[in-house]
Length: 238
Ligand code: ADP
Ligand code: MG
Image: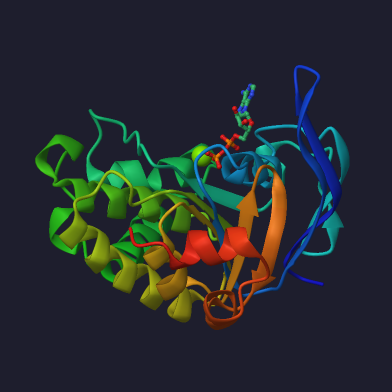
């Protein structure tokens, strides 16, 4: 299995269990959305996949490899957060190319790669600007560019659109969907927004209180909710 797998994962913070026995298979190339109310454990799952939080029990596999004990930079993942801290003094071009420079990639190769990313995300005219000269949506695109440039097999997004206004959010949804179709990589995407989940996901995992309530296609979650919680959460107006 080439995607991401959580096997019997448990999580406790300071001895307090917030998650028990999570089993989840994320297929290679899926756009998997973790959906649920604040505090249900979405970020915890993402952070455990990323290696930013250790699991308390169980194992995590990425692309068939047990990564449970590996550091974040050894896991072949890239993460995009809600607050996208770009380096303020660097141009967009340098922001995107920075991780490649750290890896020692030759300058000409970095330039070529950044140009490709610029085209893909339609930010070519912005490459020589500073982050402060960009709108929120443009900054978020640069943050996505920074994740893309490393070409990981798995992208992790934690509520990446939450800070954008409604119009931009809708535009970015369309762009993320297109990006996923073009890249064909696995995306694990966290949101509390039902519309985001329904429009983006190939599969939705609905969480409540640290437990999976339903894992199914958006259509089935909507039409055949597994329980009252799913029915009320997915059906509720935003
Ligand atoms: P979500 O992302 O769905 O809002 P989280 O994964 O952040 O939820 O939180 C899940 C649960 O774990 C919550 O009860 C939260 O209070 C708790 N939690 C999250 N991070 C920490 C932490 N660093 N220390 C202690 N408890 C935490
Ligand atoms: Mg969260």
